[in-house]
Length: 202
Image (cartoon, rainbow, N blue to C red):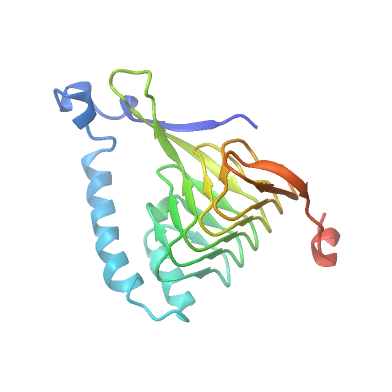
């Protein structure tokens, strides 16, 4: 699947906003203010909430525009860069220390898991452009997929349904459905067996 570029900073931020392009903001003032408000609420209302209060944290995320299916388990140490770009089906889990950097929409299928310390990166910079603009990609993590602890998903990479990205692995290309991947860059090492329930849903 080709990468889906969703946001190009040069198309939204005036070139004369800073003399040095490396100091040019990647987002509008309105967007930056909204993220500061979210960061404050994350710290006071989300991060400090007791671990079992998954429903409370889902409510806080929804208040900032996230689409959250039932029974999502986002732990208090999980970081979400832009809740308004977060789209979750049911039973999605993000462990403590997991970070979802989503300047563009990011979709998580039913029962998708992002384990502790995992990082899903939704943006990069065009290093061949002297202005070094930010590029953000819409991404998908399929149903029953598992991004294991300390693993990283590169910008624009999609994780197929049921795919597993192993411990501390780095996905630089799309992961096929029901494949198990490991290494940096991650390579497919085997096919994943499906449970009866998952096989029946195919």
